[in-house]
Length: 312
Ligand code: F2R
Ligand code: MG
Ligand code: MG
Image 1 (cartoon, rainbow, N blue to C red):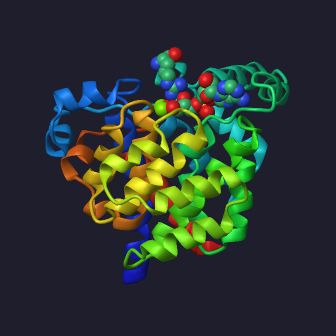
Image 2: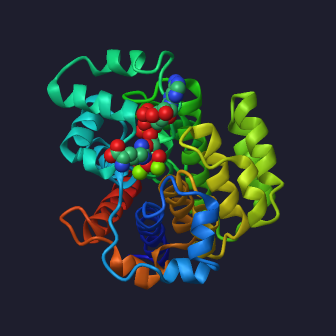
Image 3: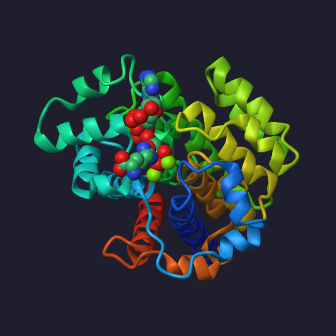
């Protein structure tokens, strides 16, 4: 293995473990208020030190595992393969969104899930569920940003048909791809690439605001909600504010309250793709669940995905 191969594998692993650790720590605070979290944890150090036992991921990581498995099987998104992976992994107790549950229940029962995805929320879902799971696409297509954008779209379609749900996934996948390619974080270049790619005035406005964020307090204005538009740019801004610290990237979004698992999953995936697994907090990674699809499985998926990447 060359040095470049080792760095690549470390970044793929960092992205998947970063996603899962952010999700699992953030999942302890989902739907709480910023004030309630701050009252318990006055500092990021206290928040990061909080877990003493195994931490369990939520639907965010469970669905990202499905995306990863589908990519490893076919080298690209094939809807039937992706849906099969989603159903095989589906455990509603991991905390899925209402619309996502309706679609996955239909998939599981062999009903017309596309019709459910179209009708459950008229116009389709604009939740952040397609963005929270898309990181593996950013890794695999990091050298072909047009294909990355299209593959992110295809990976959204089974559950998220609304343009704002799809574009949230595309923007996050692109951000992951860029992070995984950067040796030194280039803030201006990073936001310029995201802005050049984004299609809607809604995401353009959010990313322009994200590019201006200078302090953790300013993250709140970007949003802490379950909708993709009000969470994707927040996670991106948090990573960009503290690119050299995984702990800061995830704690700054957890301190916002609201959709803390997903904000921290997305920020954690970005941070891990940039820093690599070797620079993640070893204690938290060590606490990640040891279930059959837990920490060791995520490491195995990262290694397999990097092999698929190298064979392209
Ligand atoms: N849902 C949760 N957490 C709550 C857990 C509840 C509890 N533990 C339980 O077991 O019930 N977290 C996860 O959901 C988010 C991702 O959601 P996803 O996959 O996008 O789902 P959905 O349902 O499609 O969208 C989420 C919500 O967004 C609103 N919404 C979406 N599209 C809409 C539209 N067109 N019109 C109106 N509202 C729309 C709805 O409130 C949806 O329920 C992540 O946070 C993940 O962690
Ligand atoms: Mg979740
Ligand atoms: Mg969530």
